[in-house]
Length: 371
Picture 1 (tube, rainbow, N blue to C red):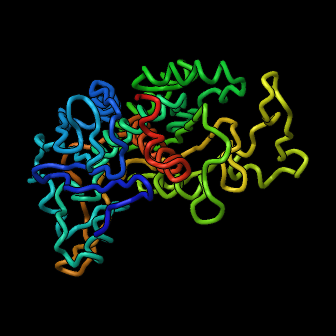
Picture 2 (cartoon, rainbow, N blue to C red; picture 1 turned 60 degrees about the vertical axis):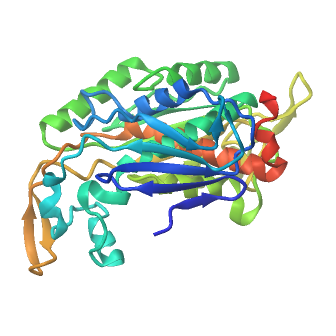
């Protein structure tokens, strides 16, 4: 089992949902970066979500920095983040050892690890493992903020309810990002947000779940980040985004809709703005051309599937008896995770962008703004 990603900056994950602890190791951080621990706590709180819309499992997500951090700053050594598990009820998962949950990783994990995997709460495949990912990403968000880069994610669609279109105007988009940053349920149209919450509540009452689409915008990126072909901006970010449990689709800019347009309607014409910077009149490319950032806002959308753990009876198989079986899932589960996944998407996008920038400029780029 390999849970390591990155080039100049690597992140390694460890732990299982019902084990003693989970965590991450960030290797390649420059020395001298001041860390705002309250910012990390804020991001972890956003990942937990509100009690009315989320799982009843309540973890404090108190983290410890075991290495790589001294007197308020990074040391340059590998930075180890540890989060201890507490609110576990492993008895809820006894039946799942032989009866895989539909659309979970239970069956595929059984095939790959021959039954030796920790199946409790999904083990290493659990969304619980996103907590240290969010903590690591929060550090990268602080690094990006020091370089004048702002990122944020909103719920563009949930349960069939759509939010308002993303603003194309730079100041309006920046203001929206600032609002999302402080919100537990980030949307542009508050009425649409309330309708989404009502749809989630209805799904809970119906013993069901709903999915959604997240839209992430990044402002202030320099032109020139990324590599052609295998380490393009899209390649690295899509790799990270598809690593997030429940993500089933990723698109940049106009995405799949661009296939229905003509070249004249899809192209982004260049011009010089009042400061002499090269810009584009439109942003159908989502800020990336040829796998490299062009200085326009980076726009990426992520499709999050409905939570597969639902309380309705479902059809499965019994791997011990080798026969079809019925399954009624116990435990504590979310009627939707799209609002919680927002913090995870922010985290992995930040991780990818810092890695790409460090590949171009070297590790010292991370700390230069703070020294």
